[in-house]
Image: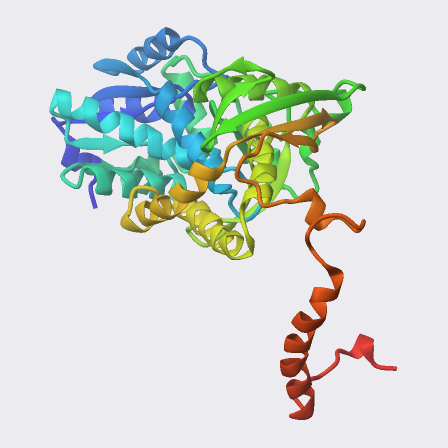
Length: 419
C-alpha cells in the first residue's frame, strides 16, 4: 500500500473538487514534502461556475499547479449512454456520480501523461464507492499509474479521524474552505445530477424534503399548471426538444431546466447497497436524466418485442451495476455496448411528456418508424387483421402442458386460493 512517506519528493496528480477534502489533502501532502498538482474536471457541475476560484483556493492550499480539464462533451455522452441503457442502480438512481468518476479519470489520464505524472490521488473515503471507481478506472485505463488514497493511509487517518478534524485543520491554516461543522449534508455535482449524503441524511427519521435543491424545486413549490415537452430521438440520440435542434450536452442542459422547474427527478430518497458491503442513504437530483430517460423508456416500449425486452432488461440491470461499481471500461461493459447498438439504431421517434409536480407522464408518441405497436391489431373493435377466433388453436397448444402439470401433481395452489 502506498503511504505519504513513499511519495515524499514526488509529484502527485490530485483530483480536486475544491471542497473540504481537496483543501485538506492538498495542504497535508504539501506539508509532508509532496508536490501536488491539482486537476479539476469541468463536468458542468452546477455548484461551481468559476474554476478560476477553484484554482485560487487550491493554490492557497499549497498546490504547485492547477489544471482545469474541459469535459462537457464527455459527461454529456456518458449520460446519454446511461439513458440508452436505462442504467438506474437499484431501480431509482441514475448513476450520476458513478459515471462522473469514470469521466474524471478518463479526462485526467491524458493530462497526467502530458506532464509525466505517475501518481493519481483522490479524496474518496474508505467507506464509499468512489474509491473503487477511481481505483479501477485508473487501473484499467493506465495500469502504470499508482493510485494513492489518503483516506486509506494510516498517517492521514491518525491526523484526521473525521470531518471535524479536517475543518479545524483548515481553519487553523486559514484555508479558504466553504464547509462548516453545521452543514446538514454534503453534495457532489455534475451536469447529470447532484448526490446528497452524510450529515442529517444519515438519520432515517429525517425526510428528504429538507434538502435544498440545486437543480430545481421541490414538488410542493413546482408550478400549479402542467407543461408539455416533446423530445425527438433519432437512433437513440435526442436531436430536438420542443422542436429546437440540440446536441447531447444542450439536451441535458435544457432537460435539467425544464425538469427542475417542475420538480422532476428532484430529492429522490434511496437506501442503497454500496459495493463495499454497507448500506447508505442518498438523496438525488437528476431532472434532465429523469426527463430524457422517461421519454426514452416510453420509446423503447414501442420498439422492443417480448424477447428483446427481456434481454434489454438484463443488460440494463447489468450495466447499472457495472457503472456503480467502477467497471464501466471493462470487457463485459464493452460487450453490453455491442448488444445495445441494434436497439439504439431502432430508437427513433417523438415522445411528448406532461411535466407536473415531480412527475413526467406520457402524453403522446408520433413518427416512430420502427414501432411494433399496431392500433388496429390491439383494438377490441372489429378492425385489423387479428381474428379473435384464431386464438382457439393457440390456447389448445398451451393447455397441453398445463393439463400435464395437473395430471402429474405438479400444481400447488397458494393458501389464498384455497376455499
